[in-house]
Image 1 (cartoon, rainbow, N blue to C red):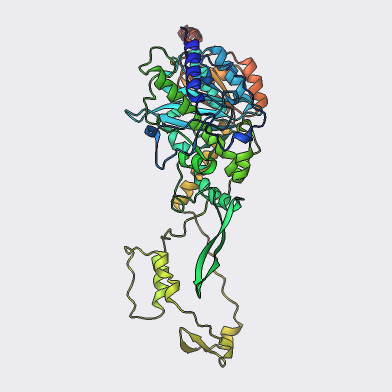
Image 2: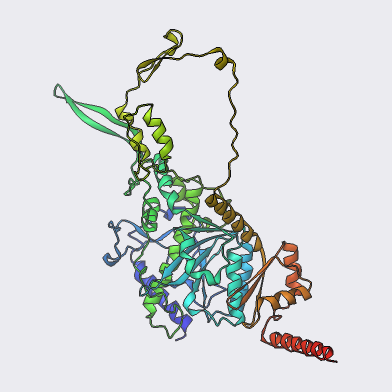
Length: 547
């Protein structure tokens, strides 16, 4: 049996095993798809059919999961988060990916500006092994790209250079990359595939979920008023106990204030869906598609299902958080509307914790304030650590208003003591002295400013880039000389692996140079050609000097 037919047979067998539950369980999103289609959409990019792990066209599969997958609270009442195959396609990027597939992906990502991203690490050594990218195109279907970092083609091959170009386009300036967690840190081990600093906008929606969920519960239409029963003179009297409306269909947050939510709990609380995370700790460095993989077919199928749905769960939460949807809007939204491009909205600044202690108070200034001309006050050592909330104790101070206008003449009440101020005519008429002091930046401030400026300059280098394969023996001075001979004005050049990244000024020059600059200009053949020509010129020049 061929690989494709075997996968399809397995998918059919899994579908039949789950059909028994369809009649008895319904997802709360069932009504959201008003015109379901049962036609399977086969991926035009990948030889592996993505319907091997899809069962229904709704937000979730009607299947309930086994106890072995339970994480945290029981999830028997939640349907499993599952996206229908017609709403997305899977593409594996590895050493077996065809050039035609990569070229089609390049055309696809050239039209996409929004993505969600996730990563997986090998359980044995915690090394980054898989990058999942979910494109958010203008029109469906969406594509889930699985970059198997441990199974990429040879670095000197053209296919590897095309994969690097794929990374450059996805992370280019103007694109939005949404994540659940700090993706800047997670992508640090993959810097050989990226141009750093990353020009695209990395948007972490995880810290914003808590604020949105609290707000959404106040907007829920399933609300109630809590009451208490009081007995007065043996007569039961119902008294309103709490005037605040609270959502009765979505439980309150199980986390503390400013504590980050897990993606699994976010999907469960916001969408009443269970995100299976049982495959999170897996051998991700093993091949997911090769017949010679050390993993069984069932294990690989489950890992692929987890990897695709984990990144699509991030996509599912983007619009509810950024556009402040209510729970009812999520429930009524069709699945295919969740994986198409949208008008981006800038997220509000995160709330700061009131419990954070403010430090770095100037000791000399504080000492001057506290002494108050009292010689008995002890000096404060610079080693003493003082917090702002130790200075301001609102509960220990009673403010008594003092009307200084009622006091006679120059008598003022200061700190509950009368003080007479003698003012002479010269002091009254003399204009206040203006003290102008030129402030110089400290060394640390100048370093911060320079780092910020350099960071912005580096970003501008790679707004418009060209990618060419380069032979490893080429040196930077030779590359620059060749580019000048071809009358190419570049802003910056950088070698990443076996690829040459050339930054130009604008898109017009990018298109012009892309047409005129040969793709094999820096390959092995041209290297030896330039070397022989350089040696010939050097020999000719040396011969004339001695004659």
